[in-house]
Length: 218
Image (spheres, rainbow, N blue to C red):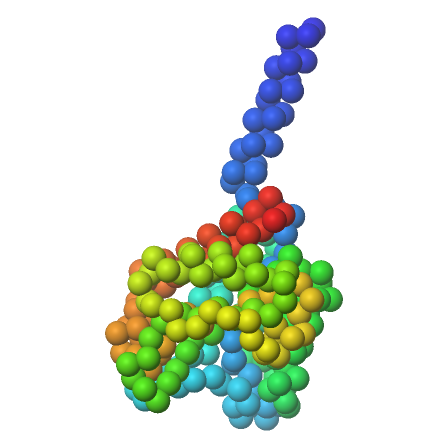
């Protein structure tokens, strides 16, 4: 009997270990915010985000990355809420700043594990390059640091890494970061941001930072 009980305990422990390894984010909830993509009620653009001189739009890149990241996190066992999706690619609002606050307020209402806003950068200087990570509150520092480490191997360079007052970082009470994935006005970086294989690498970097921070509930 003792041997049977010991075997049962071992089997249960193994099952728990396998589940933890297969679903490192089980029991978590993330709000993933693909930046911009906001229209007035009449359908005209309110907050479309940056547009490169050749017409490449930030709002389209961030939506693809957001969808891919959401799928990865769900595969890791997390619940994910997207602030916009391929099925509903545009938000409707009348004030861009209020809409930005509302995105983070959603994370507060849901009691989310964390909030991540996904953006691309732009500049009138086509040589500007690099990722940026912004946060504000102390509960977001570990998340920001892990994102910085995870993005570094992509060799995009770093533009900025600092606390910053933004609508989403001001509003969020849960851990919250805004990440800029590179400059769409820098042609080499734009090509990477549009490349599906590189896109996969970038999503993997974001996923790894989230698992490193919140896997096992942080």
